[in-house]
Structures are given as C-alpha cells and as structure tokens.
Amino acid sequence: MSDTLNKLCRNQFRDFLIGRLWQGVIHNINGPLQIVSMNLELLKMLKDGDPDLPEQLWGRIEQIVDSIERIQNITNNLSRRKEHPYSTWTP
Image 1 (cartoon, rainbow, N blue to C red):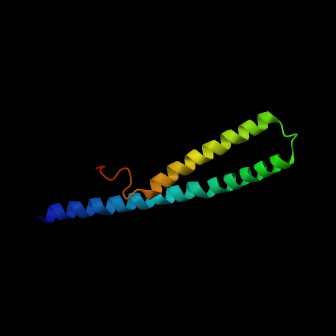
Image 2 (image 1 turned 180 degrees about the horizontal axis):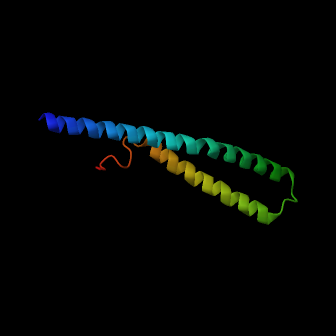
Image 3 (image 1 turned 120 degrees about the vertical axis):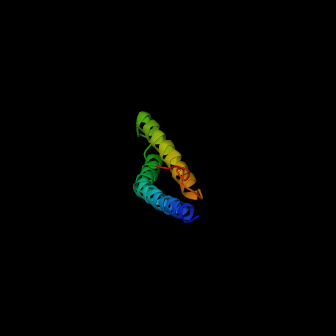
C-alpha cells in the first residue's frame, strides 16, 4: 500500500509541476501577444484616419489580427483547463 501511495504522490507532484510550467508558458505567450495586439489596434485607428493606406498592407494587418485572435483563443482554452494535457502521461 505504501508503494502505491508513494507512486500516487509522485504522479500528483509531477502533474502539479507540469501544470505550473504550463501556466508559465501561457503567461509568457500572452505578454508579447498583448503588446502586438495593442499595436495592431493602433494601426487600425491610424488606418481610419488615413484613407491612402495601401489596401495590400491593410490585408496583411487583418491576417495578423486574425492570427493573434486564434492564439489568444488557444491560450485562453488552455488556461481554463482543470488539468494540463499531459496529466495521464507516465515516464
């Protein structure tokens, strides 16, 4: 029984450490993502005041905005999970 309890404790601790690492990765992705997102919002505001902005440039800005939103959705979904995706992983 003691061996089973010891293994369970090790697995729980490993899961805890991986979960903490996972949250750190998400946090470190979100910081720069917010900076890029805010700068793109500024570009959108400038575009509204400048009708001469090339349409090709605006198309690329929209692609970047869409990509940022997808990344934000992924990190939000990951951070809402009760368990990290490798909780059943065993070495």
